[in-house]
Length: 398
Image 1 (cartoon, helix red, strand yellow):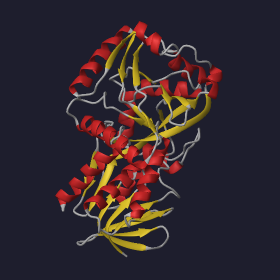
Image 2 (cartoon, helix red, strand yellow; image 1 turned 45 degrees about the vertical axis):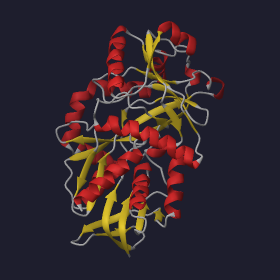
Image 3 (cartoon, one colour; image 1 turned 90 degrees about the vertical axis):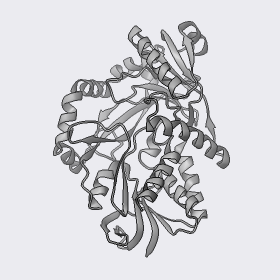
Image 4 (spheres, one colour; image 1 turned 120 degrees about the horizontal axis):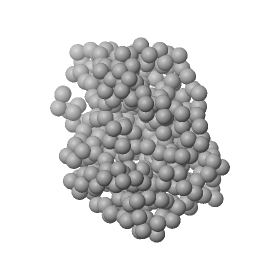
């Protein structure tokens, strides 16, 4: 069977890209293939549900521009589709003099990125968040929360209504580029052909790129983000999202309190090296994933540069008391009994051969294929403008 476009991956980025393609080319025959039985089963469905404002990113950077545009597009899409979201705001809380200094840097970055913020004194912080302790904070009023799985379901409905073919529970097992397009063999035994292939395959992106005949210089290293859910009686502990001031030397934001759109409050996540790219249960290990990681020199170079923080993350993963200490830094009333219903998401972190953690978008392409090999946070927030960028890139290469 012949298609104009084939999309691999049914997370928010694959679905948004498919929707963007059909907006520009409504008569195109499009196939989206997702190996799981439903959409948003990995990174999209396991994230914190935050609509980020973009305060962290370097002024003028692609991530900063895409995040701000993405937040507006996400909220507009939710309004159009009747999907609930809450612009509850986020507080970045400083608990030490050093964090106060870092907070000033963040405030300057927010101004350059055109993001409205409000400085919050320690006294004001106690007033608006009685359960949060800090020397001061930055309020980012435009930050919101949503269920990205609902957004994906709405995108899938929109695609089906527009005539797209959506296949779930089927994976690509072989990809061959020809002069006129791309031929794929699927796990159900079928064969299809497409003029263009776009792969948004997240945790498997490096492997899918190699399947397509490309030679990625990076490898996906999975990081587990473990979190706990507070009991219902504690769901009113905060009114805003509560984040620490990030350490610029570390690649992750640190443990925070997150209000969820369903009324729950979660505490987390940490960032622990994973041994199974799609293993969400504690202790998950897949020998093939472990061997893949251990055989990549970039992994060992990355580990050599971050071993101290890595050991700390593992220690707090094994010790609920250690994890609690991170939370009590800015929410001292939390107790061990509050840390309930553990869960985890897995971040697909691209690591280069020299050990560098890729913090920006990474694409690999050929005349007929485009592979999204790294789409870091805030990819869910930014999915719609990222999709437009992907389609622009594909059209320029045509």
